[in-house]
Length: 103
Image 1 (tube, rainbow, N blue to C red):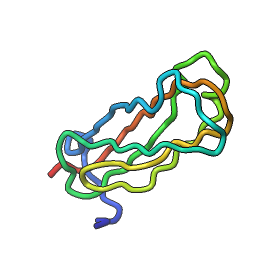
Image 2: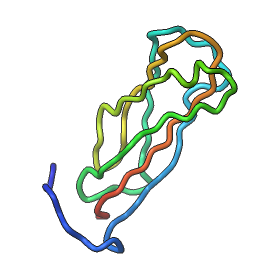
Image 3: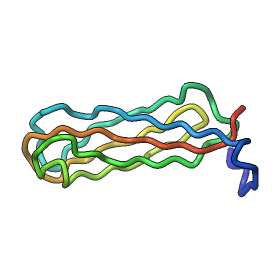
Image 4: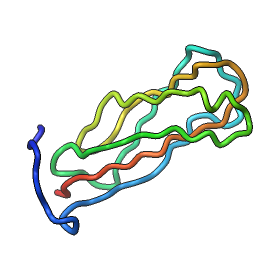
C-alpha cells in the first residue's frame, strides 16, 4: 500500500540495484516482448520507487530500438516486459534501481 510522500534521512533508506539478462545474441522479431522479474534480496516496508533501463550489450543497432515497461512494483519485486521494436540479433539486459524504506 502507498504510504504517500515521506521525508526521511538518506541513511534510513535502502537502495537495491541489479540487472537481468533478457536475451543473449538471440534473434528477435519486431513486436515481440519478453517478461522479466527482479526480486529484491529482502522486502521493503512499502513499494519502493523503481526504475528500469534497457542496456544494449551487443553491437547491433537492434538493441537501440527496445522499450522497457514496468508492469508492477511491490515490496518484494519489480515485474515488467521488454518489447523489441525491430527484428534481428540482439543482446540486452535491464538495469533495475529501487529506493525505499526497509522493513
